[in-house]
Image 1 (cartoon, helix red, strand yellow):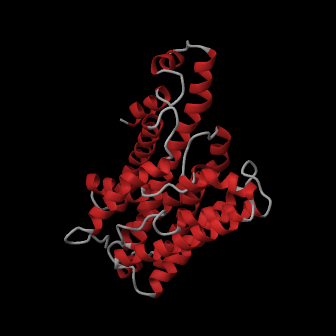
Image 2 (cartoon, helix red, strand yellow; image 1 turned 135 degrees about the vertical axis):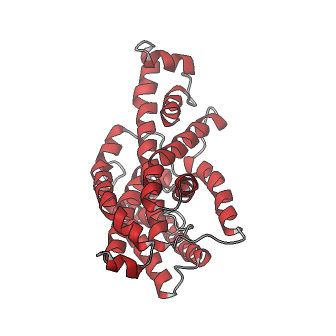
Image 3 (cartoon, helix red, strand yellow; image 1 turned 30 degrees about the vertical axis):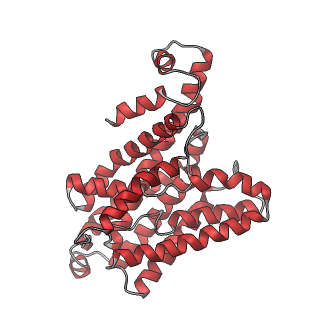
Length: 317
């Protein structure tokens, strides 16, 4: 299914190149204009969507497992907002979107993750999913407001930050993807390392200690992984909400609560959601395009309300 959606992403777009013309390019024929659109515009954005979908799906699953909370998600808990705020500060200080170091986005994501998790732990809110989301929403609102205030003082920064605000994979190049690939690879390696200890923590911290795992160390590593994944995804595609909520929710519905199986299932579901949504953004408002972040919010908000309104709110313990 994912491969089929990948091909559809190359065939359909908001421009003048029709699916039949794009198909001719895939067969090795086609006009120069069609080749440019497919190879230079649609193919890179599809690869970026593939990577961002994997990153946000994994980040959401890891945050939910760490907090034992099905509502934990980078966009809802301020991680993406922290990344955007850090990018805004860097742009205000003179950096440009073209040369912006990806480490800035990761630092902001890590700060957002640390702040909301610390606030939740201090208030004993880890076992209350709704309160954790409220803490994250408060942090997101604060960082979004601060970002808006900063951008009021610099029109150049405001123009360059706009594509981060709504979230989109349009206009991204392979160079953008290559710049964050090392961070994704490091996060992937750390995820493989931490999956077993994280699964043992689902049985309780005492059990994890008995099996030789340090829960505090596991949490620190998970926060680092989430910062790498969410920060990199936000740096190249902007803050895309609800992907980290919907993807693990769907993965657990298919394979059950085991975090190791959930993480593997997130690999195809995340890109499937992002690329499918990106295709729809090109077709809904032709010849313009709807922001990707808007469409994922439309899809994700009902899932959030469904989880919150459940008679027995699920926990991941």
